[in-house]
Length: 231
Image 1 (tube, rainbow, N blue to C red):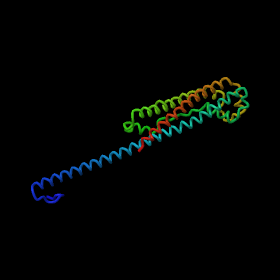
Image 2 (cartoon, one colour):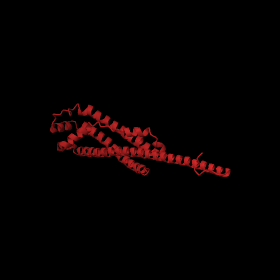
Image 3 (cartoon, helix red, strand yellow):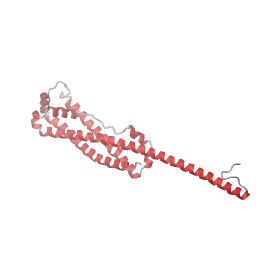
Image 4 (cartoon, helix red, strand yellow):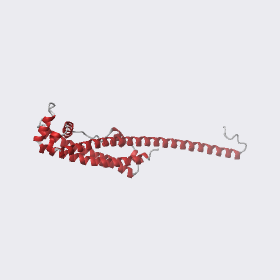
């Protein structure tokens, strides 16, 4: 038998060497387990960082979309207010404003709240790595905020569809040959209906913009908290 500490000469030396051999073997096993646990911890940490990065990226993409929608919404509100102020002088409204407003009245844009990235995150174990408070904030953003934005977009589309079916289409606004003077004449002749739809969609848009603005602040704060967790 080979001994790491040399050939023992007496029985007591044999016991001592055997004990040292067992101790050395135990130390080696413990070291291997420690290294394995360390590697697993590093692997888990990298995976958590990757999932956090994916969550932050998805939040940023939603934030960018909301910020873009805020700009579009504010433009629509400003245009509505301009036209409403000039309701008694429709002939003085710019051609571009007339076209844009009629386009907005028929707009049927949707907000896509469920991204492939978030679908992957939902099935991951990242939620086990986060505090209850953070999980609650994330849930509020995706379901209490972005989910509501999606619902309000759907309601706005209902208003726009109603406007198309009951006002724009019956009055011939979808005729591509219609001149701006003809459009103004139709608006003047149907001013009450035109203002009714304009006020309705303007009010809907104003409520959405206010909701979007408060949502962007919450998303910004959440991103800062999540960034602080990354290794």
